[in-house]
Amino acid sequence: MSIKVTSITKIYKTQKALNNVSFTADKGQIIGFLGPNGAGKSTMMKILTGFIKPNKGEVFVNEIDVLKNPLEAQKRIGYLPEHNPLYEDLYVREYLQFKAAIFKVDKNQIENCIDKVGLKTEAHKKIHQLSKGYQQRVGLAAAILHNPSVLILDEPTTGLDPNQLVAIRDLIKELGKEKTVLFSTHIMQEVEAVCDSVIIIKKGEILVDKKLTALKNNKQQVIKVVFNILVDDTLIQKIPNLLSAENLENNTWKLSFKTDKDMRSQIFDFAQENKFKILELAAESKNLEGLFRELTSK
Image (cartoon, rainbow, N blue to C red; front, side):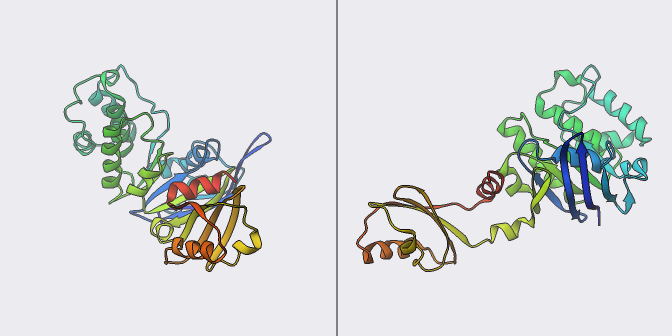
């Protein structure tokens, strides 16, 4: 097991940033770490990398206790913080040489990393001359210089244009073939395109920790329907396979079903039998973004 987090709690003065958080990650797994601002994502990542200590709990990376042996654990971890800390007056190779010296890495590894992250055409430039996308690549190159088995990436695609985003996404997928990758992002499409698993956290507590396939295979349907009159809740409850019914306003209902069958025809039949008219009928996509919004807005 590459990452094992058990009952982590972190309190800043009177604020509980993390509350009894536990999760695991296996080798070769790419995990999307999601949550609204202030949910505790960055705090958890800083604890994983040994930069800060929790008030209680345990963290292991490759079976090394991060709290007791942070330097040993950091040898196995590559970390790209949200605000990429680069020395912008240095040339790309010069900066990577500096990082290689810290980790006592063979200088031949620098060229391997430059090739792997697609920096070859930019490696002769100073870092401040690079676009945001290429600066992120420099940060990723620095993070993988010592060939870590675990990569922790905090908002690695923030501020990138669509082309840069796709390039970094592809790079993360490639790195995930041989490493465990935990990364936070606000872009749900990115998670659906890259990740094997998803962790959703809110106010320091984990709401979801599941394989992405399990979330995608959720057969729940959500249908929004507008009738021509106000329909009583007791009558709505008679619709087959109904999980829940929410009256959004006046004649508008949000209906949830647990079935493979398209329930729009059943709702149409229900309206006809009860002599209602349907003014609007639409199925809502129950994708990761919808799940995220539903869980974090409550």
